[in-house]
Length: 456
Image (cartoon, rainbow, N blue to C red; front, side, top):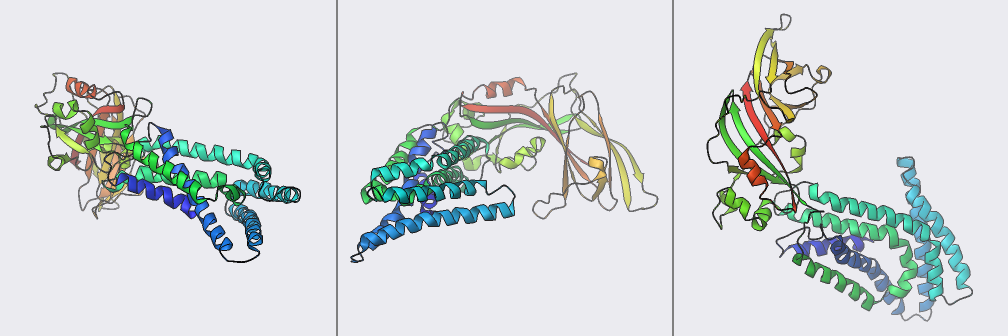
């Protein structure tokens, strides 16, 4: 059964080595079935062929008897394996062994039925196999239903599963789908192999199945991996770095959620790099990566991708007369009389003139000991590259006209760094223009984020 998992995964890796596009099956699920299922079935049959050839080539007069004992050993071995799985699963997690229990019960009945039938008909007759498979119809259908639902769910979620740096991320989605396809084949068909092997354990059939998978792997690069029903997920953020009521800089940050990185998007949407002022044939080595903290406003979604790119927004941004930016106001600092090494800082967040705030996030770095959020309990801190601990808090539940008021308690030895990220739904005209350049196969989520940092 191990070959049923190893062979499709190996094929996925080999297919991607010369390719420039992953996930060709994302908008065409039948491609994954054609590519990974036949070779997985072949992987289940190969050991059967190998054992059969050794038994038949042994020169024994009782070669057919050896095959018969091997067949029955395989069938009762399957019963023992599923019974053991049911016992272990139930012991570890009550109710977790029901799948194995169902298979064990039906295999036990099917083996008894097959023994009775073989007493009246030839051991390898088609009727034997048909009745044996029919007696296992219930667990096969249940296994297929569960397996296909798992396969379909993973296939759909691969479009938003996150990105990993090239070259490793390029292989992840296809390897997962290949392994899942093999798992579904094992789940639904492995109990049939002891009997089906009599009919299917042939070098020609295995070669045919492998050829089908190679055909699927060969034609899959010709298919575009996305459409309107299976879109490419893209994040577009207009990032404003602010200080008080001043905008220090404005940029565009772009990120994607799957194995095909941003260069793939720019290759297929030429209007976007042109809008961003990139020359034809530009090198990605010259494009800046987004700095740390760029996507803090969508935390923890920002953990789904580990790389994104930053592009200059060009012209200097000028605030409107009535526009006010979100900012932090330091209200008061109180020393702890009983503990002079601690201080309590009273803080207020003003959302300015924003009206369509999606999220507000605080990242507090330094010797924080307590705060007024979460019943005054601090979460597990995040430590990046051996730096000081950071505590992240998402703010929600208030109207934008209301200010957030809270306090922070910290040691007096070092100041706290408080980073504020506010994500606004409203877009300026330039960002709307850029957003509309993306085609229908790209589901692009856009927003404006205001980033500011304070030492208190």
